[in-house]
Structure formats: C-alpha cells, structure tokens
Length: 276
Image 1 (spheres, helix red, strand yellow):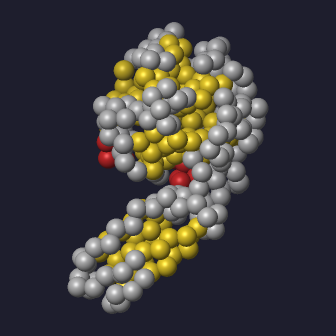
Image 2 (cartoon, rainbow, N blue to C red):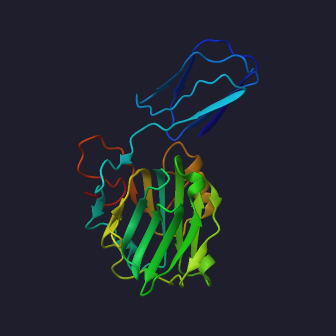
C-alpha cells in the first residue's frame, strides 16, 4: 500500500499519521522549501511501528516504513527448518515461492532447499548483490538477476517454476514488486522437481555453502501452480495478505510470520508445514 500526501504549504507543527495496513510506504511532499514539520508521529492500529521518519528542510521528503510482525534473524546461525508438510513440491512440474524480504547490501536471505545443487528449489538473495533462483533435478540449474536495487528495503520476491514450458525462460520466472525480472540462466531448468526436494527446506540457511542469512522475512507463500504476474501484483498491492480471490488460489503453505519474540515454531496458516 502506498500513500502520497502533498501540501501546498506546511506549518511548522506536528504531523500525526495513523496506519492500518502492513507494508505501507508513505511519501509526504511539500512545495515549500523553507518550512517543515516539527515531528512526524506514526501510530498503527496494532500498536507496532518500525519507522524511520526523517525531518528535513527541503522541498520533498519521504519516509518508508513497515509495521507488523516479521521473522528476523538475530545471530549468525539462525534458521527455520521443515521436516514435513511440504511434499506437494516433490515430483511436481509447477510451483511458486513468494516472500517479502528485507536485507541489506552484503547480507544473505534464502527461502527453499539449497542443500544440493542437483536437487533443490530456492529463492536466494546473495551477498554479491544478485538473486539466484535455483531449480535442480539431476543437474545444477538456476536463473540470476541483479537484486542490488532492492537492498535495504522490503521487497516482494517471487520464484515461479513451470516445467511444462519449452525453454529456460518459459520454465523459470522472477518477479519483484510487481515487475518481471530478466534472468541470466546457467544450466537447463528441468521439467519437474525431484522426488525429495521438499527435504531440507529452510528459511535463512544456505546449506550448500554453510552460509546463514541476516535478513527479515514476512508473508511467505508456496503455491502448487506457476503463479502469474497478475497474481504476484495482486499480492503486492493487497493489504489483506495472500488469502483471497484477488491473489493466489493454489496455496499449500502460508507462513504469515505473525509470531512474537521467544516463539520456537513458525506456524503454517494453510497446511501442516510448521517450522522450528
């Protein structure tokens, strides 16, 4: 959700903003360069706000912020693993992974099985500024695109696998914040996932390299079909999460990441894939 507020003149006083939707970006613009707001006061309906309001004496300024719970790594070895509940991935020829991710430059974020290059499906935003979408079944294969533009902010990232396609570009697609990305491919994207790809599915761990992420995750969705760009855009623009007719219809796992500090499990709101 994005809001734009414009002021022809801006008094030197407080601006109080109440937000009721998660993943909200607010831009406040004034055409008067000599005045400012004394304070920006953000509140949310759920009482949780993570904001970075900046007060400046300029023509325009903005503050992007997100509120609500999220899964955040706090040490060099944090990860969530899944022992069961994801078998819908095994042997399938269509699947999609969607996740809100917030990582800084030089950091790592990963959702998926990234233990073996010949047996995996993963959405990896790596520390080299690239995102790697891997789909391996008997061989190493992935698509890569530059992710550096999105670092330091929340981004909705989607991996869409359709093994029924004829070429690599038909079989694997990437979307970020409502736009399709141009992929550079290595290897041949397979026509189906392996019979055991659901094993070792993790969040925030890249087993093949022994690397752990340092990032935030929210609203992670797995679907059994090759989600369309329109569905990705509906999810991106929705203030109601992934459930509903305006986004996905074939969800088999949905981690909303709505826990609290001290929780030891990540609950699946749709299926049975509870992570620890």
